[in-house]
Image (tube, rainbow, N blue to C red):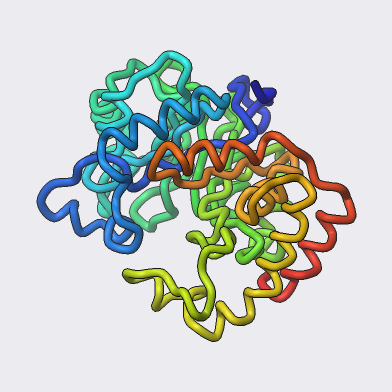
Length: 317
């Protein structure tokens, strides 16, 4: 079983890898039009979701990330059905884009009901909004921690400046800001240049990396001659010219992986894990994908390999 470490400076111990459960669950009505469902499709049915859950927990990958907004709460409901005392659940407020900070206590209660839990391990603000005042929300988050409903407080898609504001507001209550969840991968290295990764290091905040495989582009599965189906094919990096530029990077991932008997995707995840501040949360649509993702915990890259990958993807910063 892989080791655990604190999430930022909180008391919550987490694995070095999590599972993104954004597409899990059975959406109904307009929730079926959730962009992620359209772009990627849902997980491959309840049986495969159970398989992904079991394979992840068996490998020690016990942190599952969801949100109230995902498919109208369907992802939270599925995780609630799969309840296991070994699992750690990270979810997010708000449930709707027009919520205000004062809606948080009620929406937290709704999330706990869907999850069939009396607390959530990590509660995150999903995205900054003019409708949500950060100091007010953090004060309510602190109330939830003191009330035992939340173990650790996180944010998502926050800038470095917004992180500092949330961190300061929580510090006044003696509570650390545990995490900031942002997009980060070898093909999206903006946190290195926009101050977010630096602020995470300075403040002792974990960077939870979503889309760590760049929506599958780093798995080596797709090429200019084999593009994905669905909406992904029209977005960077799946346009034909982008995939042609990507081929040397996937070739390097494959070359490094062959030394360890690992896939390009596992090497890409490992590159993130090698930074102790970063915790990637790749999605898993079935048992096979979950087991494959967990293999990223079973080897280490050399300093030379880490630098080679960083240099090869410098233009993606």
